[in-house]
Amino acid sequence: MESYLERLSRVFDNTRVQLVTTAVAASAVTAGVIWGSQRARRATRARKLKRDAVDMVDFDSDVESVSIATDLDSTSSTDSNKDVVTRHTQISLTPNEEALIREQLARHYAFFGEKGMAQVRDSFVVIVGAGGVGSWAALMLLRSGVQRIRIIDFDQVTLSSLNRHSAATRANVGIPKVSALKMNFAEIAPHARVDARISLFSAENAPDLLSGNPDYILDCIDNMDTKLDLLAYCKRNDIQVISAMGAGMKSDPSRVQIADIGDTFEDPMSRAVRRRLKALGIQSGIKVVYSIEKPGKVQLLSLADSQKESPGDFSVLPDFRVRIVPVLGTMPAMFGIAMGTHVLTELASFPTEPLATKGRHALYARMQRDLGNREQQRALADGGAQLQMNPDDCGYVLEEIWRGKSALSSATDRLALTRWRRDRPMATSNCVCMTKDEADKHDKLTGTPEDHYSPETVAFVENRFEEEKQLSSMR
Image (cartoon, rainbow, N blue to C red; front, side, top):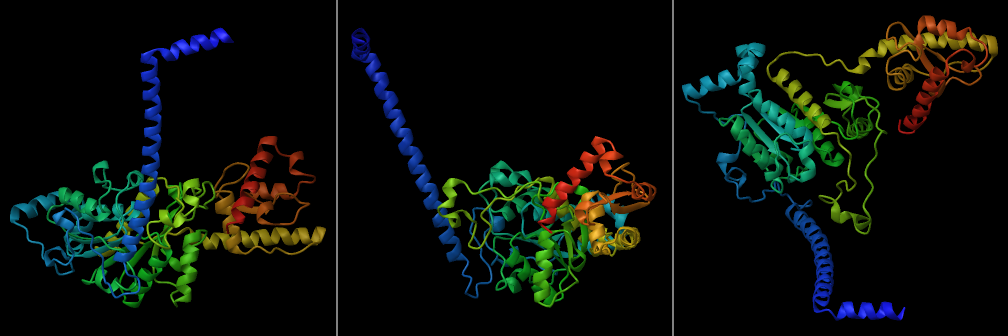
């Protein structure tokens, strides 16, 4: 032990070792101070930005819009008449420019014809919200010939938004989303007039932000209260509007639908909007893009430990969501492109009839009657209650649990619902989808499913029922 201490003493008597040790210790202390100060500055900056934003947006005043000055001439102020776009804003083109534009839009002229494209090019569209949904809707409307566009959003481009924004790049991080779009649009259609409003929409500034006699308004807002203010204003003022419901936590593109808000189902956000609009006396007349895919595969991200102490500091504005919604970047793009497509066909007087899944209600009613007959026969044979499931319940079982396919053969034709286990009551968690022939054979079986089906088939069915138990808690 003594010899070890002597060797250690000789090492530290070495001048070079002393210098190295001192440098390492100093670096560690410096790094700690820098990290701590940076963390403190970030928290202070977040609080300051929040106060500044609240100061700029006086929710109790008659402020009509907020304009944040930037170095970009294109978005420096919406007070300048040259930046304000309305339905009657003139688009001046030379013959050569017109020839270029017609070539650029040649495929659309072939699709909509001269009259339809004239209506598209003469239109004025307002997009409220320039994030993952709104940026794609705006981009495709511009590419398709809309020449007068107003885009409204108060938020800035962040690194995390690059997975879903249609135009933003790393160079755009930190600038307003509407500014990033306007710069990008100038490269695609320099003749188009783009009114970029750096502003938070509210009921108070709606008359200004939605002025100019727009042909269509696209609601791409993800805040519930603001969305309701926008939709109610459009309905009261008879302005055409289409609204995007939640694209977060969704992953199945085949479930994206366009329907009237009164016909939506199996989507929590659509249900919440529908109920709150009903309280305002609005039950229908608003087209929405939504997904019938049940959420539950992913959840909202939890707050980090550093955020739990004062979560309000990390929301964009008061009353805005703090927790992060997981988003597959392609899904907001699909919502935005679906909205843009619907608006284009409306502007061009090219009629479409969106086929919502709820259009299969006749199928659900037939399956409910068939299931009722099967259950009635069981009730006569075994005793027990009659069927308590309505057509919508049958539709839920068919579409959500069994994906429109037979549990035994994956067939999609001549389907029927029947009880899986005879000794258990009929419920969504004991109702299986089969073809009619398979269901007829199944109903004649005695004993348990394990006596007649392979372990793989039984496991598959039971796993779907377990999944249904989790989903039913969210219905």
